[in-house]
Amino acid sequence: PLKPFNRQALPRLKRRSFGATRCDSTTGDKINQVSSSSGVVYVHSEQLIRLCDTLLKVPKRAGMVHSLLEAYGLLQNMTVLPPHRTTKEDLTVFHSQDFVDCLERLNQEDDSEKNEELKQQFGLGYDCPTIPHVFDFVCLAAGATLRAAQALVNGESRVAINWCGGWHHAKRDEASGFCYVNDVVLGILKLREKFDRVLYLDLDLHHGDGVEDAFCYTPKVLTCSFHKYCPGFFPGTGSVDDVGIGKGKFYSVNVPLKDGIQDNQYFSVFCRVVDQLKQCYNPSAIVVQCGADTLADDPMQSFNMTPTGLARCLHHVVSAWQLPTLLLGGGGYRLANTARCWANLTATVLGCRLPAEIPEHEHFLEYGPDYQLDVSPTHRPNLNTDEYIEKTIAAITENLEKISDG
Ligand SMILES: CC1(C)CN(C2CCCC2)C(=O)N1c1ccccc1/C=C/C(=O)NO
Ligand SMILES: [Zn+2]
Image 1 (cartoon, rainbow, N blue to C red):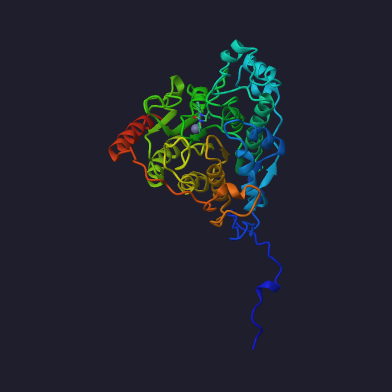
Image 2: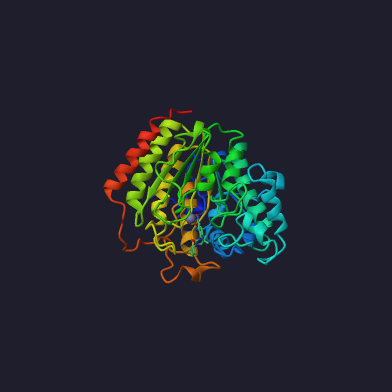
């Protein structure tokens, strides 16, 4: 009788696959070779992590995200590139010279009493304390987003990721909402060097006001933000009637939501809005700000989402549309859950399925007591009635009927 076929005896085949990267279920190791043009670029450096980890409100979050991706073996499936070190000229493509000069001047000192009125003038005070090395941080975080955008412009990859970016509140001449530089605007302006119509999707709990403000006058960038909208909640903008101005009218889309929304309802709203945007705007590239402060257990205690819910939304646009895609971070204040979420999103764009158990690594103990990848929704009332959702989507649909594809 023939000897039983012994798979182990064969060398591991480098089978050509057509786009999808399959990962085996243990460490996420790549099985099929993916051609680089459809691959994923991940921008990273130890200095970037170190500077981000000093950020007061999300201490060590950048390091936790990176080490979880590494522990799951996801870095082996991506092209890891260092950030650009941006110059002041790179930053003044969007920000004012005075604001950039101020950030540079404050780079050395801590939050001392000097320059008090100078800091007030540029929004550097309570929400945005002048952290040590603030200018170094700004240059590297923006440089990482610019390097990711450059990879898409060069055709080095179809997807590019900077989890240390997504600072969507910063204005041209003012820090805001804990955002010192608007790397999102800088990244979109870089993409516009090649792509005619850029779609910006903001999934953060907060309205992406800084990005919307930057592009509210132009139809070349359509900004669409899904966020909590209720009296007194920061930044207070982003009502459904906020549609943009002049030539940009109807090219700002806002999806205001209430507390308690969960995965299924969010996914339904998300698809009904973005499928219309795809159809009537026909974008040539997309940017997704993946702020994780919408998760169930976030200290913001607002939405009731899980990483799986956000991954379904991302899969719907990134994998189905196959457009050049820039993924950025953002909010997310339960640090381990933010790392869980962005590991899940990274695996989603790689076509990898991750084991439910958090792998052993430097920050393993932060994932207790369950040490599982997924996060469960909590029992909280959902204030988004079907009637409210239908009314909101009807208003958005009416606005979108007024734009044709670019
Ligand atoms: C200072 C932090 C950023 C932290 N934080 C919470 C989280 C947990 C404990 C405090 C806030 O509400 N913040 C803010 C304060 C003032 C204005 C804006 C924000 C948040 C913006 C944001 O997330 N945009 O996407
Ligand atoms: Zn936020």
